Length: 143
Image 1 (cartoon, rainbow, N blue to C red):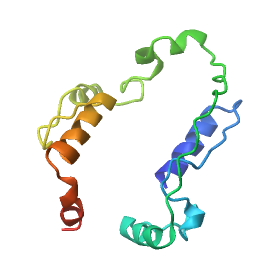
Image 2: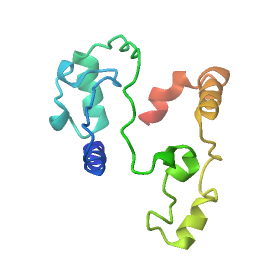
Image 3: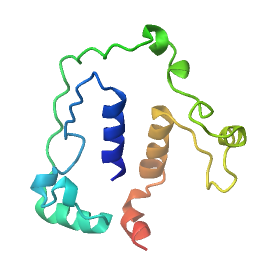
């Protein structure tokens, strides 16, 4: 899957670091709902049906008391400014035209996109509570 590939890319990018993955950001643990990760159903509905019939939702894991230090970087100052820490689209090899297009909203979008946690919370508040749309989700999602 895409996630496994991305984990491999991260591990290869940090050869001196030991990468440790922790399964914990899921409602259902794969081994408790009849799905081992490498043989999980590709279709969401098939996974959902198995998970809902066999799985149980666990309590969240406790937050860690402290996090380990970040691995040393070749350039110690590179994390000081997050806009300079991440590569630009141009540095990733995208043509100038595509870089410029990425700065504009796509006119095909059904609504303007505003990123960030505050905007996400506002959207959830409006959709779930103010507009009371959650009650219709199952019908809308499944046609």
